[in-house]
Structures are given as C-alpha cells and as structure tokens.
Length: 287
Image (tube, helix red, strand yellow):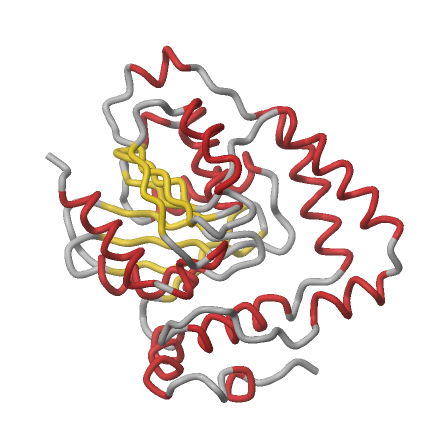
C-alpha cells in the first residue's frame, strides 16, 4: 500500500501542502471519456485566451500548480494529467485536442515540460493552426536519434530484474539540493509521482516513445508562415535539456530562450514562481 497524502507531504510547509490538497479537491478537476478511456484534466479561469499545460511523463496536471494559479486570473487554463498507459504522441495530442474541443477552445498556447515539451513539438508539427504560441520547457528536440537513444535505454531496462527497477523507482528521494521554499514540496511531489510507476509502465513509456518518434516531422517553411511565438525554457544545471539546447534553437531559430540559473529538470516544482513570472511576461506581450 502506498503512502497517504499526509504521509507523503508530512515535511512540507502546511500552506503548500494544503494549497495542493485544496486544488485537488476543487471544482477545477474534470474528466472526459475518449474511446473508452478516461482522461483527467484541470479546467479553470475564464479569460479570452487559453493556455494548455502538458505534463512530464507520469506527472499530474498539477505539476503546474503555481503557474496555473497565477495565470487563471487572466486566462482560461486547461492542464492534462499524464496517462500511465498512453505515451504515443499522436494519441495523447488527439486527446488534448478533444479536451480543448469539449471545453469550447479553438486556439490556445501550449506549454509542456520534459515529455510534455515533446508533445508541444508534435502539436507544432501537425496542428500549428490550433496554437497561438508554444512553450518548450526543459525538453530536447525530438529527432531520429531520439528513438536510437530510447532503444538503448529499453534494452538495458529489459535486462534489469523488475524488483531492482521498482526498488530504484520507489526509494525515498533525498531532498533536492536547492535553497528554495519549495524544495521539500518538490521532493515530496516527485516521490508521489514515482509511486505507480514500475518496470511495466516504464517499458510501456519507452516502447511507445520509440514507436511514435518517426511520426514527428519538422517543416521549417510551413512553420515560418505560422504567426505564433515560441519560448524555450531550460536551466543551467538540467543535465537533460541544457546540453542539447542548441538542437532546439537550431530547429526553432526565431524562438526566445530563457535559461534559469538552477532548478535542474524540476525547475517548475523547485522555483515555480520564477517559472510563472517568465510565462506571464511571455504571454502578456500577446497582441
């Protein structure tokens, strides 16, 4: 049996813990059934423009908790939970667009972190007519080499006994090495997300990512006619995205880039207000 919410967040400041609890119990929580599968998402705000937040792999929509709370004052906000069964980019993005349609949203700004940043790249490639702007946070460019790397990881994962992978995934995380009021929250949140993930889920993620990588395409000429703006976010100590930042800037040469000094791959959790400020500034320049 997994730890309870109170156990997981016992070391988190009360105001942060209760803000997350209240958010999850609020009327923002929504659900839709698509092709026999239920998709959970957040819907809030009533602004004229819409922001759609996409999660990292295995993450809940409320990984974007503070940015959602900051932006819902002026924007309509949708945020989709990750699925532990669907990782294929086309299927996931089809669900995102169906949720947008269900909520009466035609065009929106797509914001995705990590795996979610890959989903935003898919939307740019296949559905840019639905996007006002795009934000690629702490992700890498999806290329044919992505599948090659994933195949190598998949082979290694296949060789490791399930009990060792599961133990590694579920071990109690040490506090993240940042001087931030949100460090304990970020540590607890990441511990919670790892709870339902095991070798089977991890293998499914890798298999579907490998299969969906060839469906990505990048047409510079088509995107050149797209009127939106792109923002790339990364952090100097993110060992995943920062070393490959040039690949994204080469693919999207007109993109704006903001590099945080610290926060690693979990900047949105460790320094959420900094992320909120950057997103708010980017969106506020919308004509």
